[in-house]
Image (cartoon, rainbow, N blue to C red):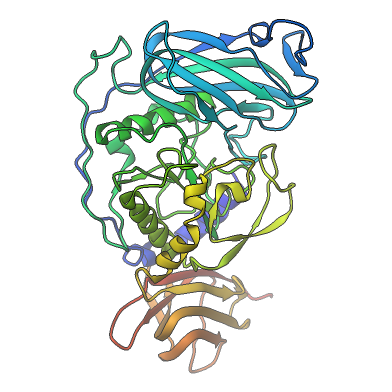
Length: 496
């Protein structure tokens, strides 16, 4: 088992009873509805088909590999699918070279193609994780809304070597037999959400079938930052198509890429609806597969659409702020601060493995990855988003900590610290694993908390070795309460 998961399991045993009433739930979400099935078909494209005609193209086929001796575009390849598809993605094995973009267009028939889309190389899991596959590369998914044929062109950089290219045709609307053959689409409506408890549409409601999962995502020990993404593809989708897009991303990531689950922790559509993404618990530090090298100790929120030249709708921006404000508050992270992450490396990250990187706690994917994601029209608004998120749901507790996390029975002192968004009244108590309160400190006030605890007649230490938790509560003089923090620690027996 992953060491971070083992650590989390120990923490969970300590805090499950204490934290259950403290973390906060979600507002009521729409009732579950039956969703159409998912159909995915793959069509292989040989390296020979990608080779342009004529001399001096800069491309050459060596065995089954296409090699670029200089920067060059492949021949446009036209492929018609065995199904009527609603989304496409392209995967390949890459032996050498940097990540590259490709261009794709689709047609509803065998003749005319519509707009050409630029698709970045998709990011992915961290190297060393169960999901990572060295050399496995892919484009981002393109939602088409319904088509029969596709045309793709790859823009290869010098020294790039690829093979085993496949186009993945996906239908998640029940219309694989042809346009108009699917069942009536359902609108997953969602009411306005409160700041502290966003109204997430659950996996079950948008149709994430458990059978498509390949493994259970790992869990880290904490969250230090939230990454903002866009999914790429069209912004012209209806309210009834949003869940179809989610199911196509889910199928592409699990069946096309072989990952455990959908890469993103949360997703938001242009109608202001927020969705639960990767499984494992929305309040837990589940490790995603969205920003290679930096998935651990971070979560991801992806906007449905492309925002390089188009501004996200006001409702989408509002939903993004709500998800960020709530999830960062659960982690007790300052939205205007910075977090220290360690790169796990990978082909699609800007930082070598082992590099410590200070990132804004609300960070665009392009900060760490070779991508335009989440688009200039989102990046330019992040300063304003951070400022507005920081003002939501006050008061808040930031950076609560207990040191050390393991102490000797009856001897080692503990230090309990936290900061607040304003002057607060702090109430701190110690609990046993079953939630029983063992001891409560005298109330203090101020913008920061700094308590030292050691064995004495006035502050009794736990009498037995085992797992315990410190619960930090805070409120303003007017009675507004912050989200409590639960800090696990362990007491080990004294030396003989």
